[in-house]
Image (cartoon, rainbow, N blue to C red):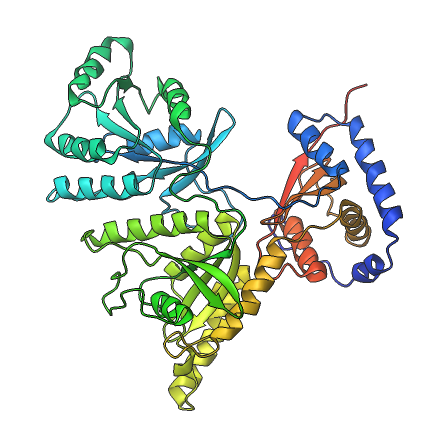
Length: 507
């Protein structure tokens, strides 16, 4: 088995063994395993995680909506270089999941133990013709959706008329703005930055995004004004569960929301992208209240197609921050597209629960040959393109007629229950012991990594941490995830399995 091959495993009796488990004995064994970790080099994070384990804590954890920092400015001023510098890495997507795309606009970042989201508007560079209007539209979108703005200017060029256009918007917004004077590679160029005081945005921060000069000082200042929870996508704890309806333009998101709400509250038009801002709507469905976050929102005034895509992608990210479960709407009358998969991947990345709604199903019910063909192809597409989310509940609906809309509620409830599921530490370690006994990890260079101890670090989504003596192959980690799903269900939620490879203490 190569490092990336799937580990098949074969039959085992783990489910039966766990059903007969003496839970007190399992807890005692897990406690002994945890104690034996003291023979290994552990860091502060490990200690914190392990102290939480002994509490047998069953609380539910929310990941609050992270505060958002938007980076705006003209093309070629160094926005993406600044993004990479803040993220501390070249943003190549490192994932062993196929289909994770490169064209992202939001990234998770961390500074001084503070986590936040960075919005890179460099992903949408306008053409030179309408540069004034489109840089302004871009800034306006970013300002709408962020808590703090970093406005990047090329200090060696100075302020242009486009920059001044943006300054007017920024001043009107009332949001905290940092004027970043980029391309100041050494102290001799600092006077160039000082000239930018004249823009009226306060002190310019001289930085070199390429070399990293001045970026740490800038981030220290940003942290002083950045809220701990985003004011844009506030987390509401308690209350109706929050559902985001996602999907590409014209798959029927708004019709679905209108049907659920029982009224025409979203402008529905055949023009792609006619829906405006997301509107939170409390809806009574299946006898309980839900808060629907509609995200079709592409504003009409963003005329550039590229800008519209950028905006839709940003909206999707902002909505996911607010939601607990995402319903991704797919149009069965068309092939599953790359964009559909990209939206599903955004949900996975956000760690939210997931339900797939196959819309316009009534069109496939006729018995003519064409529909029979489309049904056959659809099953094949689902098997190929959506294999990585085969665990998500599927609902076949017609948003236009409201048919089978009632099936959405059990699917949402199942997904949210799974998202909240916690496996007791004793039981989880008994599962790992049985698993490793029946399916040992393949030898690597004569060595076999061992799993010392495992715990569920959090729910929403269920996140497991394995303390190991060596690196577990991705194929073996996916095998562990698969068996977790087969035994505990986890239908409708991503599950995360993280490793902490630890060395034995030197005596």
